[in-house]
Length: 211
Length: 211
DNA sequence: ACAAAAAAGGGGGTATTTCCCCTTGTAAGA
DNA sequence: TCTTACAAGGGGAAATACCCCCTTTTTTGT
Image (cartoon, each protein chain N blue to C red):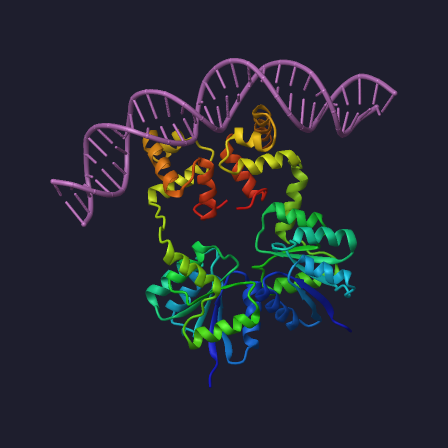
C-alpha cells in the first residue's frame, strides 16, 4: 500500500523542513513537497504537480497567506483536504479558515501524537475539528450577529488608527467632517465602543490594521 | 568524539519535536532534551540536569518567555551558549535577547543549512550574529537615545490603552487628573507622538500592552 | 414595477475630553 | 545646595463625542 502524501506550505523553513522529518517518521505518511508560501504552492499546482492527500497550510505567511491560499484552493480544488497550521487561535482567523474549507485547524503547540491523529482522521474521515474549533462553531451558531464592515468604513478605520484628526481624515477621504462624524457614530454603536481608542483596539484585534 | 549536545526550549511541540529530528539528522549533533517553556527548563537545570553545549531558546513562550529565561541563564550560568529562535525580528526583542547574553538570534524562516552553520559557529567560535543582528548593533551604537519608561508611566500607558478617560485613569491610579496631564505630556515628548492614539499604537508596537 | 428600506453624504449645536502651556511645592539624590 | 523627579494646579484652545435633523441614491422585497 502506498503512503499517504503530504505537502507542507509554510514560510518558516526551519519549521517546514523539520516537520517533514517528523511526518516522515510516521508509518504510512510521506512528504511530497514543501513550499514557502501560498503563491509558490499555487504556481506549482498550476504547473501540474500531483495534488497530495493532505496539504498542511500555515496561516501566517508573508507573500500569500493561508486565508488567501485557502480561498484559491476552495475555488479550484474544492475536494483537496487541507489542515491549517498556526500559532494563533483567535476566533476570526480560525473561522475564516474553516469556512473557506479547511478540514482541520491545528495549533503549532499541538502534541505530535495529536498531530498524527489529525492527519489520520482527515485522511480517513475527511475532517478533524479540535475542541477549540468546535467551540467556535457553536459560538457562531448561537450568536450569529456578525458585524459587517463596509469598504468605506474600513478605509475610515485605518485612518482613525493614525494620529490624524477627524478633520484630516475627512480631507483624506474627500468627505465632509460631518460625514466622518456619522461614520464614527455608526461604528461606535455597531462595535459597542465609546471612544476612538476603542476603535483602534478593535481594528488591531481584528487585523483591520497591522502595526 | 562525542556529539555536540543541544537542548531545545519551545512551547510549540510540533516545532520542537520536529526540530529535534532535524538536529538529529546533522552529523555531530544530538538533542539532549526538549522543554516546553523557560520555567520547565530552569526547573530541570535546578534539578541537576547536565547543561548542553548549546540551548536553542524560543523567544515567544507563554509561561516564561525567552527574555526572562535568558536573564536567568545570564545570572546563573553566564557561560551557557544560547541561540535565540523566533519568528519576529523587531529590534526591541532582538536587542533584548542579545544584551542578555544570547550568542545568536535566528529567525524561524532560516534555511536549515544556515541553521547548521549557526550551530557550528556558536559551538566553535562562541557566537553567530546574522546581518540583521549586526545591523541592529550598529544602529544601537549610532543613536543610543534609548527611551526609558518608568513603572508608573507604564501603568499609565496601559490604562491609556482602554476606553477610560484621563479622569478615570487618574482615579484608577489615585492621582490628580492634572498629574495624569503631566504624564501624558511627558510621554508625548519622549515618544515623539501627538495624540493618545499615537500612544496606543506605540504601546502595542512595543508590547507594553497585548491585545 | 414600485414602494419601502437601507446606505451614503451632509448640517447645527453642545457637552465633554483632550491637548498644551506655564507655575508651584516637595522629597530625594549627587 | 542645586538639580531632578514627582505631584498638583490654572487657564484656554482644539478635538472628540453625541444629540437632533435633512437629502439623494441604491438596494431590496413583493
